[in-house]
Length: 187
Image (tube, rainbow, N blue to C red; front, side, top):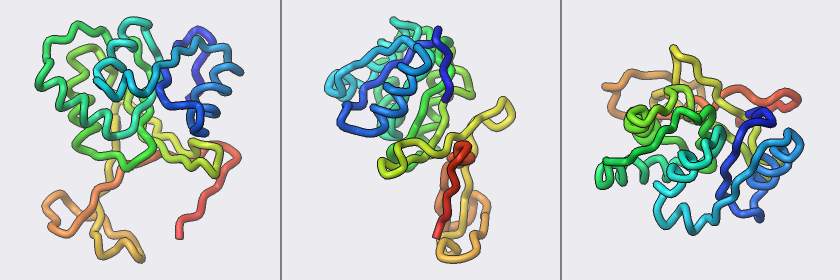
């Protein structure tokens, strides 16, 4: 994520977390972006408040863990008549926990009604020990989100990709390549 100075960020992660400090504060200060901070309680009390803020302030970049996307899906079933225009969003990070294909894909589908780009949701990986995000998926119009289904019994060795009908499988989100200057090793 490299927002430009004219872009608008909304963050609701408290400042006692490195992701809030590095990804959503220092980087945005350095780039000169407009920043909006919401108390986590405001968002967690009703996750649609996050989308209300995005709509009201024409936010271009924000984030949420997977659970928020799943909650949005559930709440849009109960509160379907929203009037948002989410076409302003360029980048919605999903990180901090495993990315569910069902939650992410369903959220993309439901929020398309409100103008959300099919390339907006971007899975990523990071660790506090690494200073936050170190991989970011870069969707394209041909591959908005990519998930890999693998044989569970292959997880300890050579990974075996399988089809949707395979009974003993797990699904993993593509979290993208590592950022420049970083290498990772998976044991």
